[in-house]
Structures are given as C-alpha cells and as structure tokens.
Image (tube, rainbow, N blue to C red; front, side, top):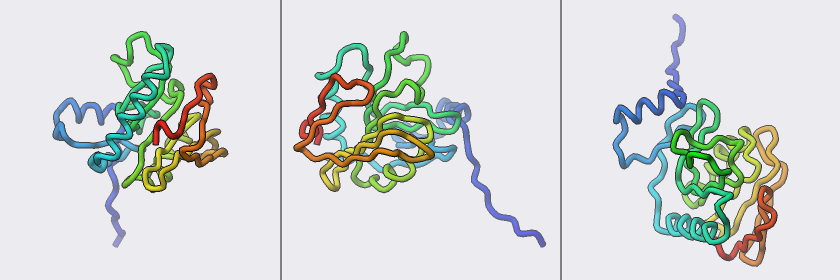
Amino acid sequence: MVAVFPQKHLTDIAEWHRMGEAGIFPPEARLELIEGEILHMAPIGFNHAGHVSRLTRYFFRLLDDTVLIRSQNPIQLGDLSEPEPDLVLVKPDAHDYTTRHPSASEVLLLVEVSDSTLRFDRAQKLRLYANHDIAEYWIVNLIDNCLEVYRQPQDGGYLDKSVLTKADNIALVALPEFQISVASIL
C-alpha cells in the first residue's frame, strides 16, 4: 500500500484575484497571499492601528509628490505573493497604481508594525521581502519599543540589521536627503 499524504493547494495571484472577484471571502476578512498560501491575519489592535496612522501622517508631512505613500495596500511580489504591508513608500506611477499593484522594484521602503506578528514579520515576511530584493525593510517593534532596520537583501536574509531607539535618527537608503526621527514614529 502506498502512503498518501494530504497536499496543500497553493494558489497564484491570478487565481487569488479571481477568488476575490467571485466574493469567496467575506469583505471583512483579513487575508494575505504569501508564497502561494492564503493566510488569515490577526485583527488590527488599537496600538498597531495608531502607529500605522502615526507613520502615515509622518511620511505625508515629510515627503513630496516624488514618492507615493501606501498604507495597508497590496504589493505584488512575483506570481505567488501579494502581502499588504502596513506602510510602503513607492516610486510614482502615471496611473497612481489604479491598474496594478506596485512590484518589488518600485518599493523604496517597506514597513511592518509588529506586536502579535513580530515572529512572523522577522521570519517569513523578512525572507519574502529579502527574496524579492526589497532594499529596505523596517519593523516597528511595539513589543521592545524599537525600530528594526534591515538592508542589503541577500539569499533570503539581510546583511545589515540595525536596532534603533527613540534617541536615534535614520536616513532612508533610497531617499538619503530625509532624516527620520525614530521618536516620531515610535
């Protein structure tokens, strides 16, 4: 007798979009497509939501029209992943991304705000973003009250990791002219 094991059904972005258009998932469902798997995301808590609003407001004040700010909107990473990071700075698009989602090559900065998802964001999301050459990935770590900065993606990880506190400032790799006060986002 041959052993038969259950197999996962992995989906791609085209099928994922068809499921959404067909109304398979309820509108209030918090789902992401990560490496072909449909994952249920944790509900957004007060602290998390407040920090996302703070980040968005901070970057809107700091940046001009040469950078688009997307908050909790999808980005397309290959054919199998469409995460919805908490905040992404992207290169402008002539149609404001009304005909497609930004791809990895258009991402200038990607930020996840983490409390209950910290382990997931440090492991699976970090690997995903590094594998797609996201040049700069930040985790606003609400557990340890710090900013984790990941740069120089290589082989599913990042060569450069810094942990910053409220006393620190940082310049973005893609936008070095802007100094970010860590205290302003924590």
